[in-house]
Image (cartoon, rainbow, N blue to C red; front, side, top):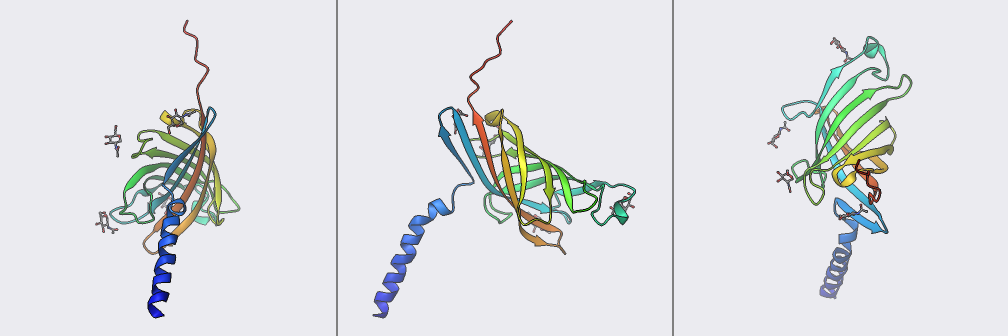
Amino acid sequence: MKNLTIALMLLATTSLLLLLPSASAAWVETLTRGNKNLTKFHFYVHDPGAGPNATLFKVANASITDTSSTVFGQVMVFDDRVTADPDINSGQVARAQGTAASADLQNLAVALNMNFYITSGQYNGSTVSIAGRNPLLAPSREVPVIGGTGAFRFARGYAVTSTYSMDLPASYIVLEYTIYVITHDHEIVWPST
Ligand SMILES: *[C@@H]1O[C@H](CO)[C@@H](O)[C@H](O)[C@H]1NC(C)=O
Ligand SMILES: *[C@@H]1O[C@H](CO)[C@@H](O)[C@H](O)[C@H]1NC(C)=O
Ligand SMILES: *[C@@H]1O[C@H](CO)[C@@H](O)[C@H](O)[C@H]1NC(C)=O
Ligand SMILES: *[C@@H]1O[C@H](CO)[C@@H](O)[C@H](O)[C@H]1NC(C)=O
């Protein structure tokens, strides 16, 4: 009886594992419909702001930053490691490079300019740029995709980000990103003169 229970449990676990590939999907996937591609990225951005491995640095502040409850005027620059898994030591798939300027006098929100420079897989070397308002305390934040290069020329879309983990004493934050990007065939070619 006990053995049967274990066998059934094993079976259940096995069939669960068989279902997992769709659940733990790849960090990048592309669907093609007609002349359009929809690419979905899912990955983790590592933001160590202190210590020997810091990749996020404060570069400027304003005269009111010190007394502002929203650190208004503070500007950060980053070149963050991006991985498919939450572990920083898992394989790098991209770098997230850009600036975050505290630009809201009332709430904690930054004007984010972030370029995902893809460093592995079929889109290695291409970039996806997001820019917009990021309300840091909201559980889920949406930022527009405003363009891209390489495979992502003419890209449009949006990114949804949330805080995966936050270790304030170590100044180490991990952000989870899901990005949807639409591209289309460039059917119109500039006429040669
Ligand atoms: C910095 O990175 C190296 C190499 O990945 C690692 O061995 C070390 O533990 C890291 N140091 C800190 C303080 O996280
Ligand atoms: C702002 O910059 C000044 C001068 O570099 C520095 O003394 C001060 O600590 C900074 N304040 C904040 C909140 O970063
Ligand atoms: C990505 O492209 C760069 C530049 O072409 C190349 O050096 C690197 O080996 C490529 N990386 C992967 C993982 O394909
Ligand atoms: C869609 O993506 C594939 C690579 O995944 C590429 O070969 C193709 O050119 C893309 N098509 C469009 C319409 O962007």
